[in-house]
Amino acid sequence: MAETKNVTYESIMRDMRAGKFEKVYYLMGDEPYYIDKITDFIAENALKPEERDFNLTVLFGADADASQIVDAARRYPMMAERQVVIVKEAQNIRQTDTMQKYFEKPMATTILVLCHKNGKLDSRKKKYVDSIKASGVVFESAKLKDFKLPEFIEAYLKDKEVSIDPKSVQIIADAIGSDLSRLTSELDKVLISLPKDNRRITPQVVEDQIGVSKDFNVFELKDAIINRNIFKANQIATYFDKNPKAGSVYAVLPLLFSYFQNLMIAYYCPKRQSQEEVAAFLGMKSPWAAKDYMTGMRNYTARKVMEIIAKMREVDAKSKGLDNPNTPAGELMRELLFVILH
View 1: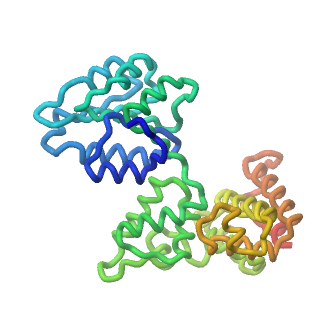
View 2: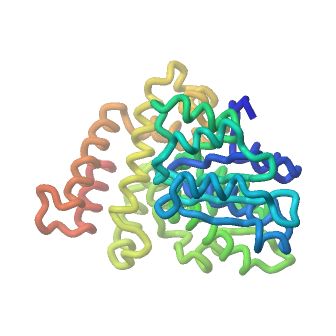
View 3: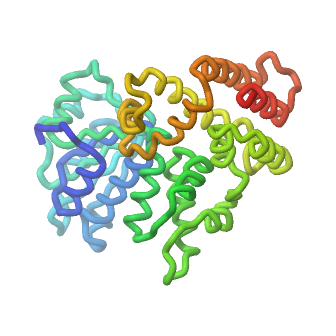
């Protein structure tokens, strides 16, 4: 596969579901979820169950050298059309010259999968990288941005034929975060709980199954701050003080910092009076996603946003013990809220 542009998780899965497997897959990046999904699909679908005992080989880059990996890849399949060789921790393979020779002439009957998590190929080794691209697929699994989590959740549930309202989506995204393995695990737990005649996730379902209060959570706190609802924000902060697992300054800071950082950027939009223009300026697919930023610009001046961001940096440092020997997290939360809301 000489052409590698537009290689995405979706395009790889689409080809594999159609029975089109490449000779080499180099899967790398900081998000292990997609690497694992592609690898598992190949292991489960490229071979028939009865063929796996003799034709599925799993090696580790820290234990097997390049010669052993190439020897395994050059073997012929036994009583099967092809074999699969999966190499985990591929970043630990040192003899790249040996691997490059294999990539230049890979076995037509072998699917070689190299898993390189929490990193990527050294772009300075151009010949090595190009030889992999020429022989198969190079895929970088990047961490999902926080603002894309709702889209991921909705797509994941749609594939399972389950609907969800926007509030529930945001509660889950804010509560679980961008660890996709944990996120999908929590979603699967919710799916199991749904009755067959009502495949819909509501805030009450989220509260019951994930343990995130539909009324007192980081999403509701963020919403209260955006709308400058002082009473509600302090009510939620008090609830967090009594229920640390429901939320804390450590969970709130990244969420609020992301919001106010984007709000500051929104002020640079040439046509910031238009929700559609602001959404496009912030790289959002839907104008609806910019609604909170339009509200934020009505309630907070650009100067105030700069002051808030500076305070969040200070609180973040204090929460990590810098210049703060003993101020409790709850007090830091109230200190931050006071600066934001007054």
